[in-house]
Image (tube, rainbow, N blue to C red; front, side, top):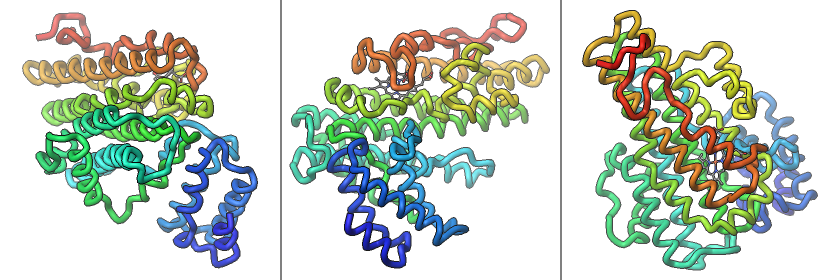
Length: 420
Ligand code: HEM
């Protein structure tokens, strides 16, 4: 409290803001339980920043404003999935309009860097808790066998990203905690000057150990979905430009992103269900049903059916719903029109259909695994996104990803003929 008061009494420059003090207080009790008087002080800090630097969009001011908005989400009654995960501070790379090869490669690389850093940070936390070198989130800590398993699965989840970054083999395959320590060292080298510190993106609502893992796995998937959405967006564009090779590469890359990170779900499955049930009492209103990136992925594949578009699934992401209603192009439509116009034929058409079917298989697999995990952790409880919970997930698990191409079999073309 004193540190913030002192900061307010001085020039209140964004660079001298006592982030560590604020984080310590949030971590000591959990975001849900922070004293109102402390939140009021942070609100004053936010107003001061806004008043003293009204037009400033420099990076330190933006970082502080974003941090305070995230810290004050419950105070403001704005708490939701995006603020819970501090998505604004993750600066998820993506949605670039610049399709030049350099920008494209930079975007892919930035996402891989972020994914590796998120997972490395999770494992570092697990190891420091096991070694009792952190007092952070002390309740319901797991035993050494679970920590070792987490290290093994975490390293596996980022193996493909490391390879794409040119770091294949940089992390050993032996003892999991040693591998996790190697990963942590590598992740330190992957930080770019413009990246906000990851520690600012960890504001659990409670003091249960496993909430750390939960938040980081969700953030990791957000990073992946943002990447998949970008790849699909470009796939639509290049299909319309009659570049089937480029479209196939995009679809393949998108599927690989999601598939190779599969151990993330196994990692989260090590969460203790009773821990999950403890902290989720305070996460009401924050559900991944509000994930824009996921709904972008789904709706870039094909336009959702009218009843789904009008349901809570898309009401929870109004920006995406509006985009679809404005006529967002989809891979499904781009494929159909390229085939029916005779622009996509023969082996090119077969290749695209195969890649679409493979992507559909990967996304369906993701949905089924997610459903199984939710059943295990949640049982028959309702969801925090105000659905009935797992029955909602069961109902959508096998929804077709595309209509022009099925998951299991090669495509039928728009006229219903079997695919060549
Ligand atoms: C303990 C683990 C998890 C449980 C119990 C769980 C539970 C649920 C439930 C019940 C829903 C339905 C909406 C609601 O009422 O909240 C949902 C939706 C969703 N979850 Fe999870 N989830 C878990 C982990 C994850 C993870 C790691 C991700 C990755 C980002 C994720 C992504 C999603 C998405 C994208 C939706 C929206 C699906 C749609 O609307 O079609 N979930 N989850």
